[in-house]
Image (cartoon, rainbow, N blue to C red; front, side):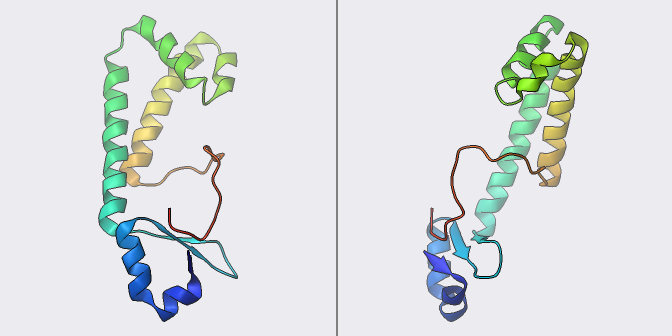
Length: 125
């Protein structure tokens, strides 16, 4: 567990925690901070870029009849896709892959609903 005061008073011990994993820093007057090593953040970002490129490549090589299956697979996360006309579902799949890659390339992700639960605790994961 780490707080803003601990970070100010003993940055070395908080840095040691960050060497072992992500550190959530609780602040009194603001949103919690996430302290992580740059090499870990870069590896995560690079992994997202590779995943996005692989998705776009995979989708670009699918035969047309497989696009409906791709659209159905995305309905697990985006149930409203099912309500789109078939032509628009195909376009959504292409747009989704393009947006995913752009987000990964620029390392900027749109804020959406949180998945997987979790909390804003001020402790090390």
